[in-house]
Length: 98
Ligand SMILES: [Mg+2]
Image (cartoon, rainbow, N blue to C red):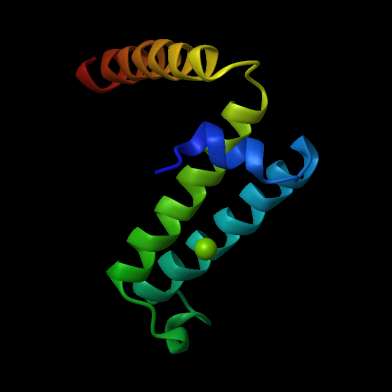
C-alpha cells in the first residue's frame, strides 16, 4: 500500500495546488463543525460528528502531503514528521500544563 510520500509523488499537483486544497478541506471541516454545533445559518446542513471526523482526516492527509512535497526523500519526510510532531506537541503540552 502506498503511503503519503508515495501518493504525493504519484500525484502531479503543485505545492501551491496542495496548499489551496488544504484550504478547501479546512473549509469543508468548518462547514461540518458549523452544522454539528448548530451555528446560526448552518444547522440545516445536517452534518454529523462522523462528517467532522472525515473532514478532519481529509485536512490532515492534505497537510501531510504538503509536508511530503516539501521533503526531498521519504526518509526526510518521516524524520521531519517525527521531529516536528515531537517539538510541536511538546510546546503544546507546556501550554496546557501551565
Ligand atoms: Mg473533504
